Image 1 (tube, chains in turn cyan, yellow):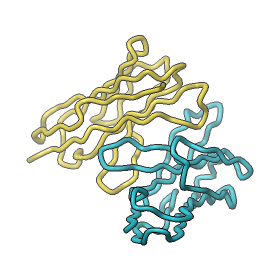
Image 2 (cartoon, chains in turn cyan, purple):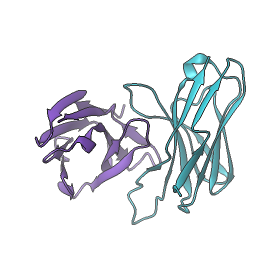
Image 3 (cartoon, chains in turn green, red):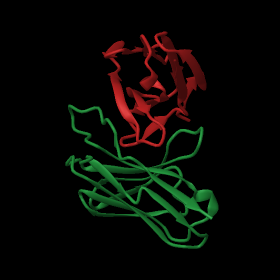
Image 4 (tube, one colour):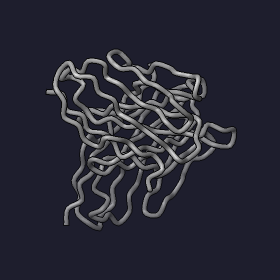
Length: 115
Length: 113
């Protein structure tokens, strides 16, 4: 089983619908992230969380919200999806201990299409 | 503003040949630089991680170099294989920006038989 699992892997929805992307991890890491990837562009950070009670906005948080339900679960919501939110979304985890360089471990991605 | 620039944007080589990908960054103060491989439609997977004191790191046929003075890194792939076809992403983290990494746009490598 994958260490970082994202569901759904693919989703097609209509403008205005509410969408939730879920992420769970078995790596025991405290830090979790949501990134967005558009064709030909680098990954951009949407939100990140350093522990269950910590939520931080990334560079492109508008139109998104997150929930850290437990150490192992971090979900991303689009309250009212719009077409320019069509993208590939990645969840990632890291362990920022003193002896660790904060390597990111990514899920397999969730491809979202908003019509 | 912290930036990471990769070149070339895309590259096509023949199987068995070597190639080198470049990464220039302005992230400061520097913490570490990572190279990731991303297969089409998959999540990125780490190849190498280098901190300030390291100037070279190898992972099989992949060798990364780091020049912290000029803020440049390269990823050299030796004896390329068809499975090396992927996007290679350079990611740089700053010590004062905990939890946030700056990603390059990636270099798309295509290895042809």
